[in-house]
Length: 127
Image (cartoon, rainbow, N blue to C red; front, side, top):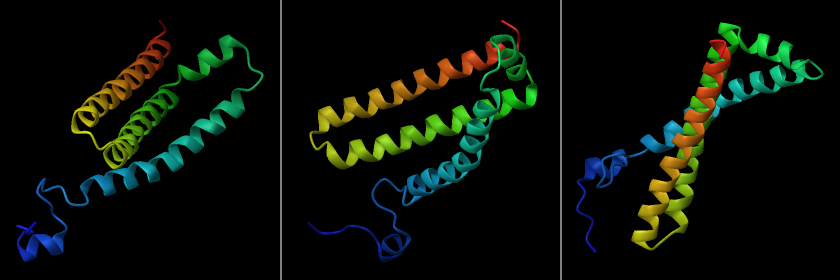
């Protein structure tokens, strides 16, 4: 099969989808963000160990902590979606199943993300 890309597009790495390395860089960007965000989350969980339910809820009502937790959720679920997308595209070869798996990946990540965001907002606004 003949490659129909121009020499310039070959150098830029742009395929027929015109995305190039966009997906790669998004995955790396969220990975770097998660390095700091997940570190914050782990330190937060360790610092709350042994606290009562009321103390934990009170700490999570702090707007700064709630905002950082929302960033953890957004970055983490988007990174999860990108990573699973790569795995699905690389290892599922039947186009119909691949399409269904990619849709399921999007819906699953959205469901998990919105559920977590709802929980943080509910605690943050005193619900």
